Structure formats: structure tokens, C-alpha cells
Length: 108
Image 1 (cartoon, one colour):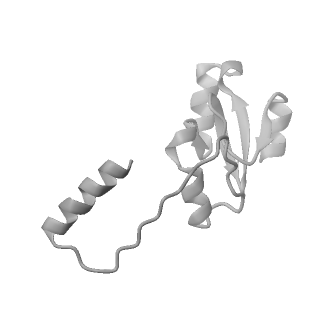
Image 2 (image 1 turned 180 degrees about the vertical axis):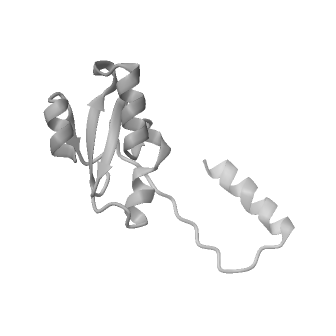
């Protein structure tokens, strides 16, 4: 499929992740990304109707897809992140939950 489309749209790119402002057609674990600026409105509608496409990059979280084993490619971080993990092993009553929420709010 993507070979035929790549012949029709030589400016398309094969990527591991969908791109913004592109028609992203998923095939296996890769995307054929066709720039929307290069397509007429009719071509965009046709590609959407013929193939499972993903026009908006943010609609599926890349980490969610990786952790749910829908993707084998680990997302790359553009910026460093810091993770804070709290593990509470006691059941919380509503008063205690409010106190923890105030504590977390003050911490951040």
C-alpha cells in the first residue's frame, strides 16, 4: 500500500510517529506521512475515506501506545522530565484524602 502511495506522492515520508499537518496512514508500526499542504481538499477526503488516517498528532498519546504495547517504538523526549511517585498503602478516608491533596498542592 505505502509503496503505491509513495509513487503517487513522492514527497511523502515514512516515519515511526505521525507528523503534524500531514495525512498519516498507519501501516504496521510505521506511518506514511503526506503533507496536507501538497494535497487538494478532494485528495485529503479520499485518503481519509480509503485508509485509517491520523491527522492530529496529539489524539493518541505516544507513551500510552508504547505502554499498551500498541507500538514497539519508545517515544523520545524533547525535554527532560522529573517524575514524583507516591505510594500510599493505607485506605484513605475522605478527611485524609483532603489532607493529602493539600500536601500535594503545597509540594508542587
